[in-house]
Image 1 (tube, helix red, strand yellow):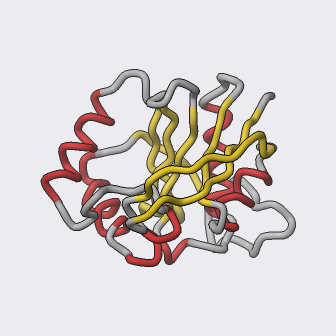
Image 2: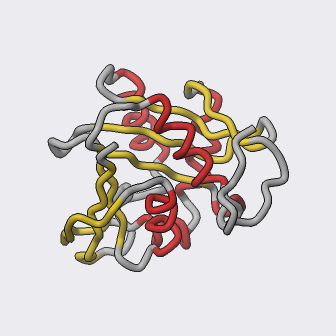
Amino acid sequence: MINPTPDSQPLSGKVRLRKVQKADLPTFFIQQMDPEAVYMAAFTAKDPSDWAAFQAHWAKIMADKGITIRTILLDGKVAGNILSHAWFGDLEVSYWLGKDHWDQGVATCALQAFLKIVKTRPLYGRVAKDNFGSKRVLEKNGFKIVGEGLGFANGRGTEVEEWVLKLDS
């Protein structure tokens, strides 16, 4: 069992990672349609309710050998996903957790486990400046702010300021 960091609430069970299965996709799809989650993630699909676009996106992700991706499980149930990619040049980590699993230490534990799988450094993370929870997850795992960015966020329909964080070791 991966234990949460001391300042997070106790987990109700085990957090573990496994390879993504096609059966996980409907859960990921439902999670990405939550309006609050879309707002907080900011950089999302143009239309989170478009199942065909979602399936095409995930087919591309799952076929890309340069992407490491895992399903996050809590008590054996799909809680979200975590992946690393180099779509914009540098290797980045990205994760999505269903809203019902927020503020429990699940994302922090999942990232901790993922960093044992993806050992390439430096590793970057990007987060909307007002997404304090996601920023904290990265910081608890050793990421440090190294810059700022500005990009159009489909989830908000406007440009959004973001933090760029980096893990060196």
